[in-house]
Length: 414
Ligand SMILES: Cc1cc2nc3c(=O)[nH]c(=O)nc-3n(C[C@H](O)[C@H](O)[C@H](O)COP(=O)(O)OP(=O)(O)OC[C@H]3O[C@@H](n4cnc5c(N)ncnc54)[C@H](O)[C@@H]3O)c2cc1C
Image (cartoon, rainbow, N blue to C red; front, side, top):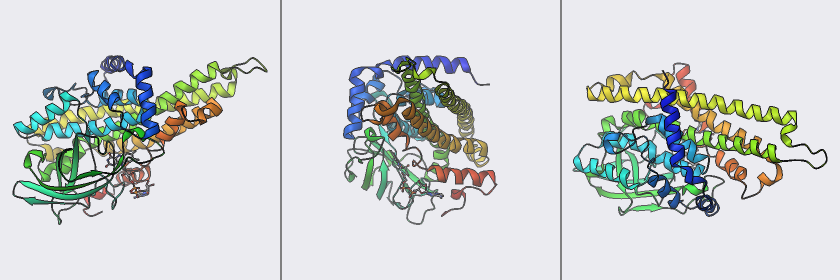
């Protein structure tokens, strides 16, 4: 059963902790980050200091242990103020459950604790120019030298490029390795051989410091290699894929929610001098607002239900790992959860686009100008359809599963 009381009280706690995001100071930093395409370090620092940044990390590592439900609340709340900041945290937070569970030595455990307690940011460079939005297929590979690893990897777009404290870089385990034999390293930003290009001059998500990166890493110590390549792909699918897809969906829900709030506020305030009526007194406007609300409510229900399922599955997988049954359980994983997750990301990004356009329609000319929140949310909304797996690819993946055709990575080389 979905625990509505726990969800409501967690939601209150997180919203209260983040109330400062509405302050003029942080709002002007958010606007500036969008104008100049730079990383909003002060906003990240504020979120860390508010005590909710380690929302989905286990309590044993000093996290909040609030799981996928907490992740959804946090990211959707932040996205209502700054989608780009929420995008930064989405990439960081989808890495943490994987990293926590793969930490296998005292040094690695201490490193993860330090990241969480000091509010350090992890970036997650997966996509490569060759394979694009098919995040599951890496062209780059590592070369083992004893316990250490060297690799040359080109990553096409990395959120927090050049500003993250750590990069979780995935490469295949050798030139001949299949696409699901991956080595994952937590590469400190200070490691020689890391280069970030200038932040992209993009349409939206401009404050996420997203850019291409190259990693020419020589002899990275095994202290930074997290997990066993035999298990890494399955562990990624178990612990990073759900918070990644849910996290993206929460970011786009946040955009949709804020556009709805702005539209409701505007139509009540806008009064015409010829008939002395507000926009909200027109029935077509009332119907439009209701239509926005219905779209939002169905997305919200899907988000909450999927977050609950992901929390239950994660607990089940943790239990299976403790009993040495992880691979038996993951090989029989539920297609429904996968279909729900890809579908949710598609529908969330479509809803964000649709509600941003509807808010633009209702708010009129002022919302078409730079500096108006709807103008920024409209631009930010369009990143969702492209983020890997792109919406078109997500539909292909879900369609394959629905029709019993299996997933591409189950047939290596796809
Ligand atoms: C703001 C932003 C931040 C990002 N941050 C990160 C990050 O931190 N880490 C990371 O790893 N990546 C990140 N990415 C990259 C992203 O996840 C995608 O991998 C990337 O945008 C893919 O780009 P591409 O042009 O190579 O896509 P391509 O793979 O060339 O796809 C282009 C288009 O072709 C269509 N298409 C592709 N394949 C199929 C198919 N099989 N069937 C039907 N249609 C298809 C889709 O419409 C798709 O949008 C980010 C992207 C953005 C926009």
